[in-house]
Amino acid sequence: MMFIARAADVLLEGGVIAYPTEGVFGLGCLPDDAGAVLRILRIKRRDPAMGLILIASDRQQLEGWISLPDDVAIPAPDPSRPVTWIVPPGPLAGPLIRGKHAGLAVRLTSNPIAAAICDAVDSPIVSTSANVSGKPTARNRYVLRRQFAGRVDFIVPGDCGPASGPSEIRDILTGNVLRPG
Image 1 (cartoon, rainbow, N blue to C red):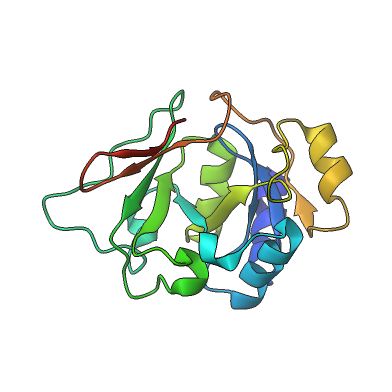
Image 2: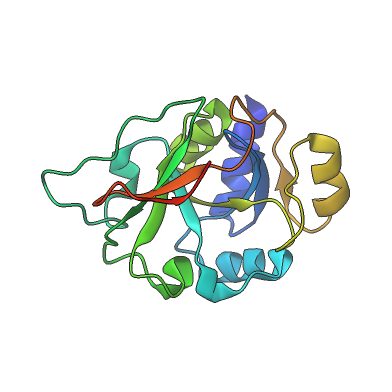
């Protein structure tokens, strides 16, 4: 899949991509690239205090970003019901990613395209919905291209699914639902 390699090159060069996830299209970059993270916030017109989600294909990619107690594990993803977990942050998770929050939002992605991108860069990536804050999220490629062509460096081909919208958000330590899916 040439487009995965292209997405990885863009990310590794400090760029911003739009890509499919389980339920909506996302905007992403490498989370340790402050310039790219700030660019996503500008594109979305998002308040930096809101924080961002990181996705990964496996828990090892989150090393340094999270600091879970030994007896707590991020559950395996359920493709039809994605869950984003609020977890204790690790030393890499600064306020640019966390925003005003004490915890860090992370998700193990079950979307094969998103997972392949994480694997290609061997890192979690930022995953925030492809929309301007307060506006509907792009759920198809035509809307995505209309809204973000020229604003991001690469639009990754592919479809969202199988979920029908944004992920549920839960606190990993309490199990409390913070945002229904």
